[in-house]
Length: 125
View 1 (cartoon, rainbow, N blue to C red):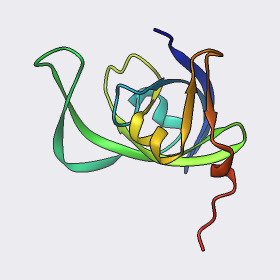
View 2: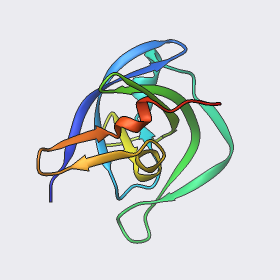
View 3: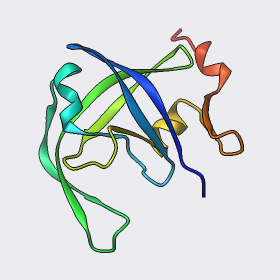
View 4: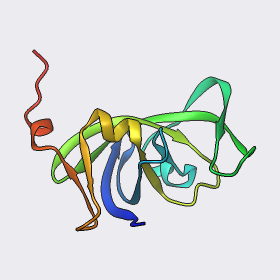
């Protein structure tokens, strides 16, 4: 099994920062470590605690906050919500929902993530 990680530029209302980001098709939602948010964005309360299941059977993580962040892949501006996960093993994780939304293709043969060229041309009409 191949793992694809790359540095991505994340941008929030407080600034911008390159984060080493894991693409995880097994995670349905995107996540971010709380320690990297100080320079990016203020987290927003989810209102109710969410219990998010992990790969370990019967193990759940409490999630109380999220952030909306822009990020760049190959100079293409993308944006999504990231759950703030204390103790996350990575700085950021791009999950399956974000990959599907932005048509991100995982190329395991070349160990890279690719943005579908059509995404760069999308417009709101």
